[in-house]
Image 1 (cartoon, rainbow, N blue to C red):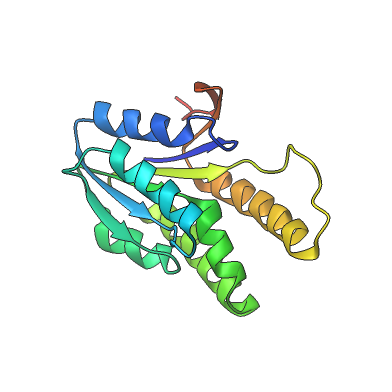
Image 2: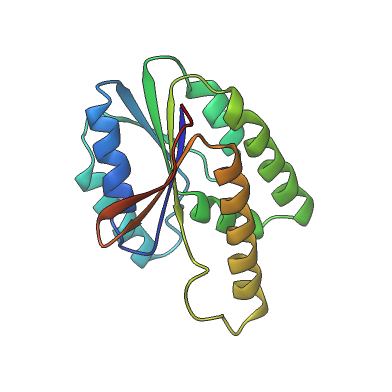
Length: 172
């Protein structure tokens, strides 16, 4: 089962994904995409580390997310990917071809994965339109990525103020 969890900054989306993982009663691993390239990001990463159960395996995949998912997804296992927008940021710093290849690989692998896959992503398209070219490109790419991932996921949830709102549920 693939589940995309969207929300704004500090909306509770990671906490919601962690709660779903805990209630799944499966073995849980977290695929992290952030890179601590400055002190502020290091503090954000430390905050997430401190708030998740210590026995959860952590897998670092700042670029090749599809390969990490293929390697670690299995029946009876829950994988949390936190988060797609940081992964996208990492790819925007690479070549345009690498961004497209990695995006295509992710979209191709998601429907084939066993187990439970919880994908956390920021919904950034509801705010102020950025002034700079790179930040406008990021907002565009994040919107297109979220739409494409939502299209292949079985469930999609928007989290606002810590409250989940189901946007897509499996059809009976």
